[in-house]
Image (cartoon, rainbow, N blue to C red):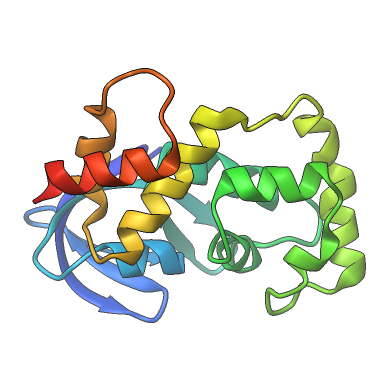
Amino acid sequence: MLAYLVGKIVSKGERQIVLSTGPLAFEIAVNDFLINAINLDQEVKIYTHLHSREDALELYGFLTQDEKEFFRLLISISGIGPRSAIGILSITTPDKLRQAISQEKAEMLTVVSGIGKKTAERIIIELKGKFKNFNPGVEGSVDSELFEALIGLGYKANDIRQVVQNLPAGEMTLSEKVKLALRNLS
């Protein structure tokens, strides 16, 4: 229904933002990565998922389309609601979650409030088949690690995306990519 929204961040709270798109402002539940990656008055593109319940409509937002798709996979599992899924996406990137699921590392999921050992094992059972051939490869894992490293240094997600997209193709180590990205971000 709503693929994404583009607007200005007018307020940030704990796991929620208000995004003004002109005459309308949307309250959006988000993960910790998004909260830390954006600033007030920043123009952003937020990928969205509208969740419908009997008593409410809730809007969930993500920095990337991949996060949104992983969120949808998680909420398709019986017993995993949107809040648990947001909590899971707050602990690490979708690539690292796929890797943990492929390697059956339930302990990674149990750090999320409300996710016990049995629920973590059910998530692994439900999703493992979907990631059978998952091999993050050097390029994918380096780019997600590069993104995390630059977010950790305080750079904005939109700036990082722009720089990462413009990095030259070819095999480079994470260290080389960080150095090149930092030159381009300065």
